[in-house]
Image: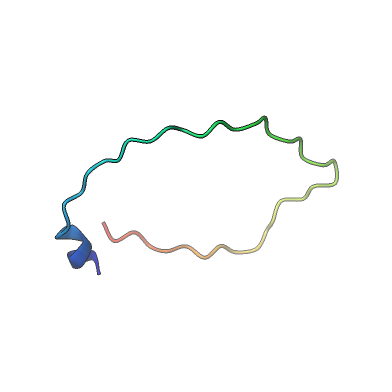
Length: 44
């Protein structure tokens, strides 16, 4: 699939960045997820 995508000319698209609100505070009892992650290896 990489070879197909490489044959398509790429142009950057102008866009407006979205306005985001302030981040919410983490709850006091928050524990980070310790499970493994599904990582896709980079081809490049």
